[in-house]
Image (tube, rainbow, N blue to C red; front, side, top):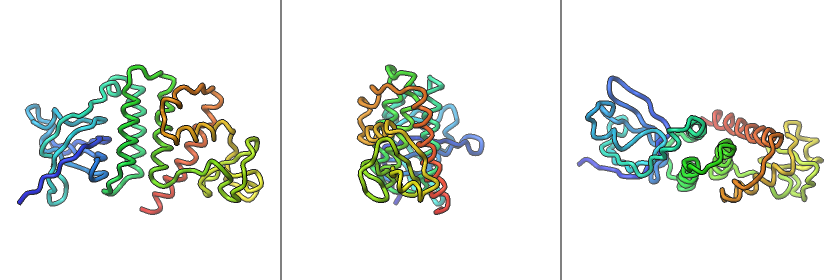
Length: 245
């Protein structure tokens, strides 16, 4: 007897195969990441093509084939149309997709990841979203995504000695997984000096309240230092994950 599985899925990647097939990579509500075959979906009269597309939330049904899951039905739940229409938003969505693709390989249900994806795509889709905040949406996703994966940075005390932090002498250590004090940084040459405002914004981001984060006034000089530490941590975790696979 053929078993049919139904779930909601965020589609973050697609790849054309043969003359009319397409492979979709999606993060689902019930199964985590899956790769699923849309057989003949690129044909004009395919019944499937009207219900699933890149950077959408779809209600999908599939069966488990011999080597791959096969899509049998798909209906849009949310299209996030603004993302597809505005190139700058599309670039942010693509960056989120690359992060998911790099860090999530196997199937494992995780409601935390599904929820942060839903929240971030909903934020990015808003017509009222200030263009100056597009970049911040990505890092809002990134830090909360890493937190769900178990890499929430220590921001309240020194990650090494557990002492109270001096706001004028703060360093971020990938190895220690958070902020460390000046004394501990002397024994940690890879630590990156950061501003106290960076720590404050990271704390707000990890509260997952976008409305508060969106009201912050961020100067260009701070944006540079914030993206530096964010990319610093991201590259470290990516290298760590690559070694584990």
